[in-house]
Image (cartoon, rainbow, N blue to C red; front, side, top):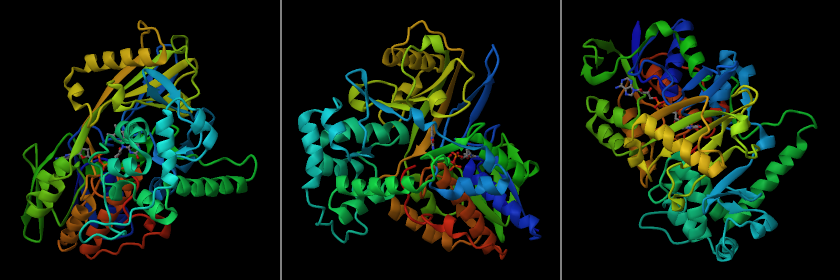
Length: 507
Ligand SMILES: Cc1cc2nc3c(=O)[nH]c(=O)nc-3n(C[C@H](O)[C@H](O)[C@H](O)COP(=O)(O)OP(=O)(O)OC[C@H]3O[C@@H](n4cnc5c(N)ncnc54)[C@H](O)[C@@H]3O)c2cc1C
């Protein structure tokens, strides 16, 4: 019997475990042992189900709350696990986004696609941007695409920071009032260091193909509208983001159940890996160890880097150079009477220039069905990230209080409004940063890994930070290690293969 040790019980590690378990149930002589340092499984996917004292439940996602519907990995896994009927889309009748400007909420104008306006009238009439800012954005239509490349670079492998790209195409105001809050608040990234090729390669392609972001997104908008027009009237529309009725943790729970909880150990950390004749020995925090033929490291970059030291020094160095930002979310439930604001929105983004601690807000009870009992409002605030990590030094109750005060101020709630549910979720080093040179570093990790039979690294630190990317990376890691051990692996379906080895959009 071959054994594969898996370190980390987030979606990547659980996805890998499920693939190994499937090989075992096909009759292959292989098993896995998964160790997770926390008492719970799921990693950054954490759904808290809490009762309201007057009845009903809150479904509070403290980490990821959704995945991009167009990426197939989670949907495919849900179908295989028999939980596809529990998938749900967002409540798009409430799909509005606000940006904080001078302390007030201003609706994101209709037609903005990522950083580009595609409708003239909403852009002309919004008070989100100044007239010089609007004209500078429109100049994107005239500015020629980049034609000069760095030494040894071509259009195909060009990279630059998101900040440099947005400023040269759309101007500084677009960076400060749109691009920065979008990637800062939601992806926990700093545009000044973020690699565009590793996070939004489609923007570079769009510039080369259409000569302008506005023209590129206009083209994209027409395609989306044509697709929607083909959907028969009354048929359910696929929303941009998806989750599960009972919260996103449904997928990691189902993966753990299907892989076999009997082979999973929680509350114990891998402390060191060392080679052993024909395989690996993983030392654990309780003093025991696991001997295995193959090993999959599916921990966060900072944890994987230290474990990789016993595997390959260069891989350890490369993974160690992926910085990770820390954040926290505060989920709060209020009585509807304490929330005298229009509730037809999904999110608020706070630009760094507004100098607030809350980098974003999600109105979970308007974004998803069934997240709060009737008459209650479920809100989630984001704190920290690369621009404000210092705030996380505050104690838990101070952070909850800070979120309450800033929410009350921004949404016009009474400062004395008392939450019926309040929970803080901390994510230290939870978000890897794909900085300039990321793709080259990952290519080198993969090249070394390919020469090391039975070894694979998985998770969100490599080729996409989104939940589907992390799941797919775990599945691929399992397939690599199984194949290295001489175990047959079924071909990956074409739906899964698309986009998998290509750098992905950040989410
Ligand atoms: C606040 C927040 C919100 C997010 N929102 C979204 C979203 O809405 N949509 C989206 O697509 N993505 C989102 N992401 C990103 C997404 O959650 C992650 O990319 C994905 O869930 C990561 O999965 P993973 O398995 O790679 O890593 P993790 O979930 O980080 O799992 C790694 C696991 O390894 C364990 N571990 C670490 N060291 C050891 C050790 N030595 N021994 C044993 N175990 C160890 C950790 O405890 C952890 O459980 C969000 C991330 C954060 C932080």
